[in-house]
Image 1 (cartoon, rainbow, N blue to C red):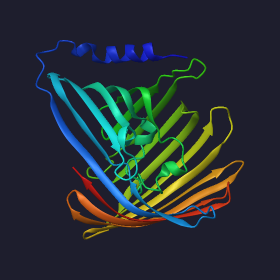
Image 2 (image 1 turned 120 degrees about the horizontal axis):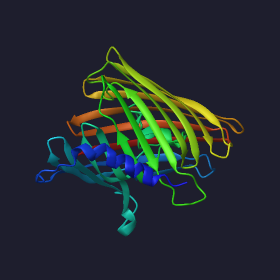
Image 3 (image 1 turned 180 degrees about the vertical axis):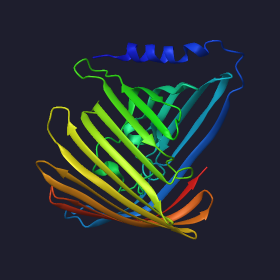
Image 4 (image 1 turned 90 degrees about the horizontal axis):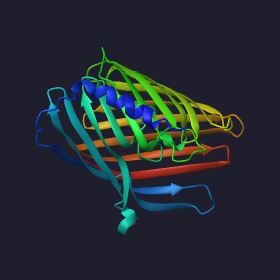
Length: 314
């Protein structure tokens, strides 16, 4: 079922009151990126022992910016690609990430293109091992960056925000997907002492998902918890689980621990424990080490990973 005309109509209505457009201002833009590479030992419990690899952990670059159209309307855009510094070469080296164009004003923000769903982004900063082996996507569904997407983010109302993602299906036999989310607080805990979020996916990448997340400061530490329930749209593969994470900064160090578990209704449990230390070399550069142990009861496998790496943002 194709709901794209309805979504585009909603977009048109949202900006109709801003239709009187002045001369376009010069386009502003920023080039940004992140290089993250590690030496990693992998023991997959497959009878072949451990192997050592150089891994590019979602290294990326992009350009983002916009232009003011009038006093309360601007066009915004982002074009981002992932690059593999370790293994891939040639045309296979680049992979598309968030790439969209949209409008922003007092009504909020509307974009069209490829973008993370609001259920994915509602997790905030709870995943302390994002882009590593202990990334929550290893056990949890819902970490989707979808194409054919229209996204809406509301302005902040007393720290509350609402978001929605509509995913158009290219297949007539597959329904369009919807992702909705509401959050309270500042993800970075700069303006609020805690952050809360709730989100629901319906028929997104073959799954229905419900997610709750929250984290807060306890003295200098940040403690977080995320709960999720997921089920394939055909009613199979039902599971529920949680993530618990703690990080503690001390001088130039940040100590991190994260546990996650997913209990499948048929096949049993999968869980993961990760611990790591970051050492800040500068405002945009750090070195780090981490360990991850993953127990997959569903296939009777115990995997172990150790890494030492460096990250630089620009």
